[in-house]
Amino acid sequence: MEGIRLRTRSTQCLEDVTEQVADAVRRSGVEEGVCHLFVPHTTAGLVINENADPDVGRDLLEKLAALVPSDPSYHHLEGNAHAHIKSSLVGQSASVPVTAGRLALGRWQGVFLAEFDGPRERELKVTVVAAGVETQAATASKGEGLTDS
Ligand code: ZN
Image 1 (cartoon, rainbow, N blue to C red):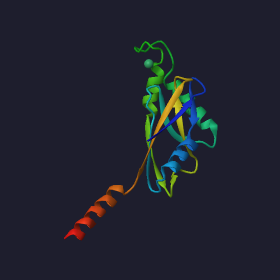
Image 2: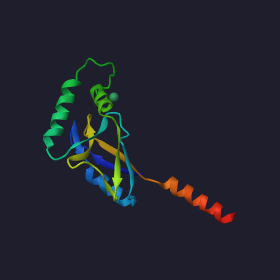
Image 3: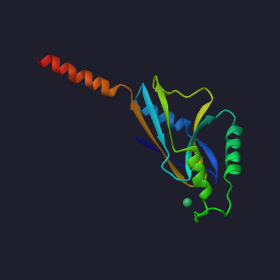
Image 4: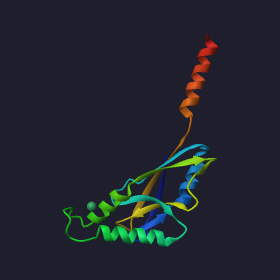
């Protein structure tokens, strides 16, 4: 597991972490498997969406702000209830297939840490799991059994 640390730039923003995640996958040496991503925060989240046109992210943040406005009507007294709700709406985790040692994202997809109560230090946990490891282990132990008998 690797932790990608970053300082978000503003109160609400999408930080493109696609390259950092791709680097973590390369460092793992896994050729085929799954890259699991997790944001361990309650006022930030994880978004996989278009990274070609930055207006897509702008629209997302603006619509989330319209759906969940920052106003004094919430029970949570810390003043960031809207950020907790947005974090819950977008979610904190995602899994991306790893194929030929690379993230198998769609052509227009990028990975973003979604900040809803920044700017602040954030972390994204990256776990890359190889496919078929247990199967290989099971095959190996079966093979040993056959050799012994
Ligand atoms: Zn809070």
